Length: 217
Image (cartoon, rainbow, N blue to C red; front, top):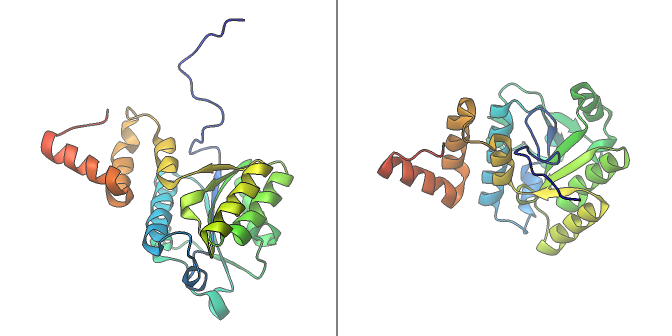
């Protein structure tokens, strides 16, 4: 049989309207012991995905564990992207076991969830495996997660991928939501986020626009 290609995106690609983002335990106490990723890079990537989700209208759940009594506040880079949004504080290490979180998941009503947070081997593995067991598609933003060691992070990612989760990166998440530079309504949003949080890629955008007036579209 001869295949016929068509200019259409694959069904496994994310769109702003087909998933919910859950940001988990980006808190001071959790960060102190995180060694698998530099703290500055982690905060940068958390800010990138937060602003991408906010800008593209992706419903986002913000959740903490023992915020007042032990773990401290969520990163300002995240909360500033969602001004006024309430945080769901939990006692359970597994976000998916918290009734208030699940109430929001059901209210959003999307069968894909994207996860980021601390630590990969505990607070991301728990909801990832639980959501997969209930039939959800699960994506994990690997470089917006961290753990007490590289080994802990990598084995957690392996475990989730083996169970069916799909790994991705923070910049990939942003660009997958945009996907086509001809989408002019979100062009400035995407390039603006990339310039601020996209590392060397963002520098490249700034250079091209400043020196040559370049435009991706």
